[in-house]
Length: 423
Image (cartoon, rainbow, N blue to C red):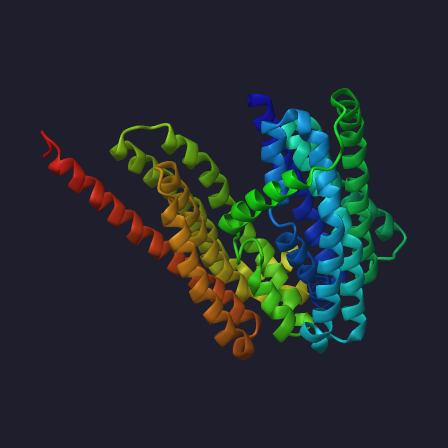
């Protein structure tokens, strides 16, 4: 288990570091307009792929761990599911993109449709094959496939940069090719052992009854794990519909900078959940949560103060002069990141106390208010309005979680007082 944690954690850190570097370089090379065009092309296909996989990666991971003799059937089920998913999602994008992205011109619409049709099968099949590797406990193979995407992306970008061919179209092509590399590696690592397994157990490769079970499990897991602002990026999707590419490019630069703050809270939240769960004393559990929230507040607060006073020179240093007008958005999104980090620690801590309802209710409350804010603010204020919507959603989610957690703590104290010997 320790080796698995080190492999997965190290891969996560490495891929984030490569992603940060390539993101900065692409943003500088393309400028605000080009970065916005790239977001228009990629954001909607990514959202459709995220929703359209129906939670099958989680279901296949679970099934591979529980049913080792049926792992070859899980891959067959994934292949069977991927074909209708590809066709249905591709047709949805083909019908909707010309309407949703009309303000950006037919060329960008065609590129978005092309990227969707090329990206979907590669993404779905890679996810399904790698989910089986993860469920089987082959963490070295699993993490090799995960790392292959950013490594191939960075390598291919370097090739195009040397050739002086860095354009929006070439970066889209690099995205597709890097996913093709990951797909090829995933199949190379997954197919041979499953082929041997199928020969030994003499069972067919597809089990439709099992596929229906996988889909039921996957859908239930996906509905509970959707993160509309940090996962689906509803703010970016709204800007692709209502804003020009230049403004969207500025927003993407600010979003990348603020994401580092939110990532701190997410990382601490991953630690606080098991630490709280293995502690039986309720008072000590709350002490752990407060300690982690204080740590996140100090780190996030320092970043917030720096950004408040140095947003413009920071943007000029990292992205160049063309992006300095993103400073107001960066300040708002960093504030949202600080609040969001505290929220993630709190709800993960309460999850460790066995109260999953707190995060569900708080998330739904914040998202509902955030969507209303998007609808009201983005048409009027553009990218700045989207940043305010993210902050509003973060604050309301956090406030709801605090209220629900305090209410739960009050009920716990009341129970203790009613018990024999209670204070």
